[in-house]
Structures are given as C-alpha cells and as structure tokens.
Image 1 (cartoon, helix red, strand yellow):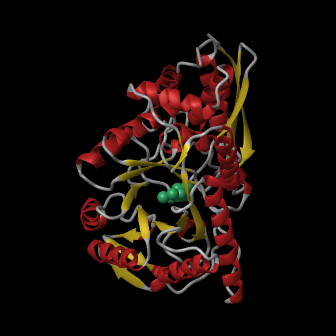
Image 2: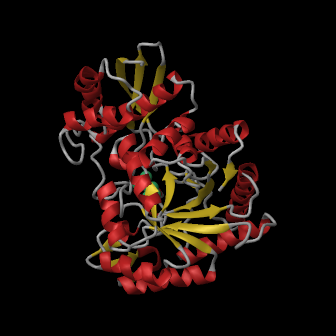
Length: 423
Ligand code: PGA
Ligand code: ZN
C-alpha cells in the first residue's frame, strides 16, 4: 500500500484573478498529483466555509491561512496514511477540523487535499481518475455503477451575480439533447454560441462574456434572452425542443427579499406563487426541461408549490437549496421538494461526502448534475467525477474561456479512450 509522504500547498489564481489553493501530494511510491479548488459567487447559506484571510491583500480574498493549515496541521496528520482509503483520509481531515462547516481549517484547504489524494491514488493504481471515482462510488453503494459521458449544459447567456448586466436569471443554458454523441453535442453548441454572438452584434448588443463564458448583454426581459437563444438555434439549422433544449439557473436566492422575488431588470416584484407561474409560463413557451434554484433556498413553501406545479414535467435542481450536503439533501427528499441535485464538491469539502450525497440522490431517484463554480481553474477533475459517477449531466459553462473548456476537453479524451454511452 502506498503512503502519503508529503503535502505542499501554494496560492494560485482562479479565473476571476482571485487567490485559490493548489495542493501537491507526494506518495512514497513516487506518485505526485496536484489539485486546485474552485470558488462560487452566488453561494448557498449552508455551504461549508471557504477560508479567506480578510485584511487588505487581495481585497481580503487571500488564502494564506488555509494554505498554512495544509502545510502544517493537515500535513502532520496525514503523513504515513494510506491514500487509497479515501473515507479514512477525509475522516482525518474532518476530525482535525472538528466543526460541522469546516470553518476551522477551511473547506478550500480540506478539499484541495481530498482531491489531490484521490488523484494520486488513481495514478498510483494505474487507473484513470474517472475509473477511480467509479470504484469509490461502487464500493459506497455496494453495486456496479455504469460510467457515462455526460450531456453538457452550456451556459451561453449570463446574468445575475455572474455578469454586470440587468438580467436577473443567472444562467441560460443549452442542452444538446438530440446529439448522438459528445462530439456532435459540442459541435452544435459551439455553432450556436457563435451564431448567438453574431445575432447580438447585429442588434448592437454587447458580446462581452460573463464569469462562465456566456454573453452578458443588457436586455429588457428574461424572455428576450430565451428568444435570442431560440434565434441562434434556428440560425444553426437545429430544432429547438428536439435537438436543443433549454435549462435555467435562476439562482433565486440572489433576488429574494422579504418574501418577494424582485425582478429588477423587468421592474417586477412577485410572490412565490406568482414567480412559480412566471417560470411555468416560460416553460410553456420554450422547451425548458430543467430549472435550478427556481425558488429561494429558505422558501420551503415556494419550493413545494413549484415542485407540485412543474416537477412532473421539468427537472427541478437544488443547488443553493441542497449545497451537496447529505443531511440537507435527505431533508429535502423527505419534504418532497425538487427532483435533482447539483453536485459541487467545494460546497461540502471532501470527495467522500460528495459521493455520499450522490449515492443518496441515486437511492431516491433524484438526478445528479455535476457542476463547476463561477470561479474556476484549469483543474478538470469534475469531468472525471461526472463520468465515473454515471451522473449523465454536467454543467460547466460556455464553450469559451479555458477554465470552462478544460472540462469539455477532458471529456473529449475520456470519450475517445472508452466506449461509454452518452447521456
Ligand atoms: P456559483 O454559481 O459558482 O457562483 O455559485 C454557479 C451556480 O449557481 O450554479
Ligand atoms: Zn446554481
């Protein structure tokens, strides 16, 4: 069995130019692996804590304390441990942290080690990372999990916290549902993206991009964003509703205040039931097959209403709602809200707990969607996580900006080297 020989953590920059953590792990068989952690902007209240320094440097966003935690306490506790026992490694990390939200060591510090350990283990075992994740999940669930090349959800129009425009809904995504394989899915998506760009240009609208690589023009309404996407699909000679479907991430917690949904861009204020009606109206007029965070994370009644109203025909995804947390997801399942869960491993902070959440979803017929964060790096481990867990869906931005494209490019290689089914 290999043993952990050393851990080194340094500061690197994420796609927003803000500090994040990169951790290298060295095993006693000579294996070295590096992991980098992402960072969110529209975060859920119950997410594990991302430790930031505060103070002047990097506008308070420094991560030197988290890095010191890896280089000191975490390293001292893990040297000599067997990295192949992922549950044990993550348990040690949780034990030295000692809090429920990882606020002592920082979820960013902990996750960097948890991913680095999984990467080194797969390398040491001569496995691809997706195969390794597949084994870990299979062991947890006591059964074989089929690996799958996920259908991408590509966020081609950005609003909310990810852009400086007036659109309230955070993400407008295309789902190349009718594509026969991953390659075709990406080709269609790239063509639609470029056609959307030329449509925006013709109309004199901005073609600058937001944090996840989608365009971020100022528009009059959310509906206008959907109409522009419909035109781009048409211009690509594809059929909306069969070749291409649409997915939204409202990130509704960002515009919910005092019991009301404030659509500032449209100058409207809506109650939960009016906002549910509003979303249903959009889903009636456009082939929207998935809506994420359609209600505020604390608006339980709103979630129940939305789930009852459109949960039968639409994938309703809990992101800020479930925060990849096994206990929070269990509670949501018993409340019968949503029907899918967004999986972001930095919301919970370890690989083991991420796999635990995935297994709970699978056992309860909730769909898993593996996701990036708006602040990313070139680390593409989530592509392996998506394939290895057989999630079937991945959300990792527009076909633009290398930190987004790195994930798609990794999927091209996994697809090429294996004969997994698509979607
Ligand atoms: P975040 O956004 O990474 O800024 O939280 C992504 C999302 O809400 O899905
Ligand atoms: Zn979201």
